Length: 205
Ligand code: VGL
Ligand code: ZN
Image (cartoon, rainbow, N blue to C red; front, side, top):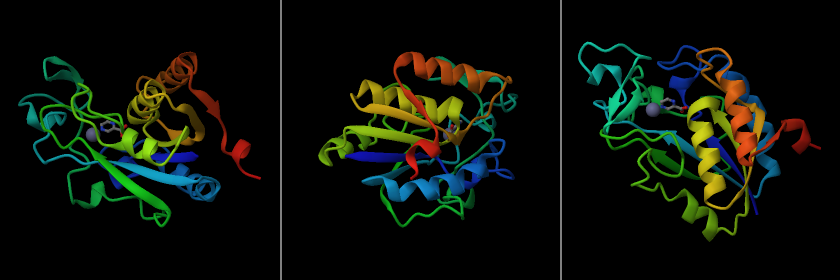
């Protein structure tokens, strides 16, 4: 069974949002066209409490995009984003959500960030995504969404480690790309790790 995993297609990651990914809205029509070609579609949502430790605002004197610390490790400090139940955390209005079989939220625990759709950055808490995929006899996953160099990357690497054949749909993803070249380096790293890089036209008839 083939599953499309939609990563963090939420308002705060779109142009105008709190942590806007450049051109992030361009992926919405692409993923809408792709959805009917999969057995299942699932989605992840970044879902933080208002005092999340990844927010620069939780670290007095620190600014967004500086490197700080969380759980004793270096952590990029982000603008406040995807706060639970706010407009910024909702799915992009243009996203077709009717086929989404299950949503997996992440980033609840204020003391650890959670880029991957599978588990937190400390690998302590699982979202249930791997179990869900196994229960539905899924052996291959295709990943699309935001942001290529953070949550898409972490989700793809975890999918590989969990034993799924893992594809990343390049034109259905966008990244933060700071510094410029970060997305290209991320794609090269993912390909070297075993993620298959594909384009939406390879999947559409
Ligand atoms: C993300 C930074 C912080 C992402 C989420 O969805 O890539 N990036 N939280
Ligand atoms: Zn986040």
